[in-house]
Every structure is written in C-alpha cells, then in structure tokens.
Image 1 (spheres, rainbow, N blue to C red):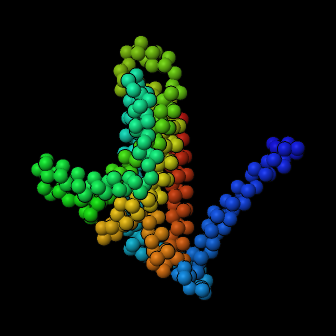
Image 2: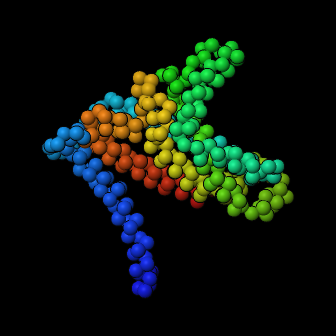
Image 3: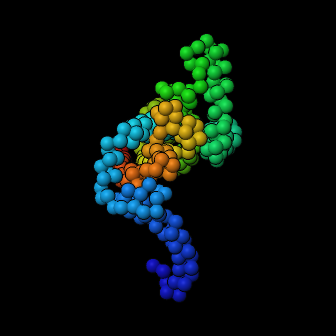
Length: 290
C-alpha cells in the first residue's frame, strides 16, 4: 500500500512508463486486432470489415501450416537441447574446478553478442570451415553449406540457437544449484549414494522450480523465433525455414497481407499463451511429486 504522502512520487515514477507502454504497445496491439477483422493490405487508404474471414483463411493457408510445423519442430528440439546442455554446464561450473569464474564468463559470452554478429560468424563457419572439415573427414555428401540445404538448414539454425541461448539457462541453473545445502550431499555420501543417485534424489528435485521456469521461458522464446531466421536463412531455402513470426513479418509488411497476418498473429498469441499456461501448470504439479 502506497502512503498518501508518497503518492506524488509514486505517480511520477509509474505514470510515464505506463503511458509509454500504452502508446507503443497496447494501442498497436489493439489496432492489430482491429485490422485482423478487415481486408486492409497495409497500404490502401480504405478498408472494409470482413469479420472472421481472415481467421478462417489462416487454417486453409499451406504456407501458414508449414510455418507452424517448422516452428513447433524447431522450438521443441531446441528447448530440449538447450536445457540438457545448460544443466550439464551448470553442474560442471558448480563443482570444484580451477578457473571457475573464467569459464563462467566464457560460457556467457555468446549470449551478449547480437544475433547479427552471430549470423556473420556462423555463415562463414558453414560456408568455409564446415565444408573443409567434411572434406578432411572424407564425408563428401556433407560437403555443402547446411544453410542452403533443404533438409539440413533447420538443424543448422538449431545448432546456432543452442550455442547462443544455453548461456542464459546456465545462469539460472547455477543460481538454483547454489541454493542446495552441502549437508544433503554429505548425508547421501554417508548412505553410500553415487553421483547418479545424488542427482535424481537431491539435485534435480531441489532445482525443479528453476527447471520449470527455464522450460517455460525457453519454449515460449523459441516459439517466437525470428532473429535467427532473418539473419541466417531469410526463410530459405525454398521457404522451409519460415517461422510463424518471420512469416507474419515478411508477408504482413511486404506481401500485402497485413490484415491476414494480423489474424495469424492473434491466433499465434493465443496458442503461445495456452501452451505456456499448460506447460507451467504441468511442471508445477510435477515439482510437488519429486
């Protein structure tokens, strides 16, 4: 409860941010929802209300369905790999190793790089070093740039995303590991438990809340994948790496489908909220059973 004498200071701090949020976030979102019920192409000065036509057409569009399939496939695979890798790194960094702080900084460095820089690095890596490495190993059928391959392009994007994103999850897992009392491990050692039993009996149950938040944030973030697609493949080759966010951006702003993609965006927003809610409820119930 804010005291009356502090109300002026409180409003001075809160109102500017609230007004800016309303102007630059809430109003555009409401306008997007409104335009989803029209036939506006984003350029024409006039439009007419068409009701739910755009929403019905979303489910009939093959490009949209293909983008949904790619996005879910990418998000699920990347979420699993990121959390496995980041948990393994966190366990290693939480142990008694030399140069621990150096390695913490080293593993976090990819996360602070912009996606544009990362794209330049890996475009060069895949176009040059990858091909040379496959040639040296004698694997001729893999001597191609995976970003230009219909079957391998999405795996290349997964690889880059995992490399950059694991750092953030590692920090959260490290925070969770440091909350576990050493007394628990000492007691388990006296009982003769090995490291594997310690992990499943002590470590994982104790960091379950951190696992929950990492899984929810990871899946939500990867379902909205955009930067990696734009910087690495531009949706190619032949449109096989178009995510929902990329499709909405490209066809909405340059494909004369503003109203249609606005409807697509509204549907996808509902999908992400529903998935996040279900995932959060399931994982929270699972925490209680550990």
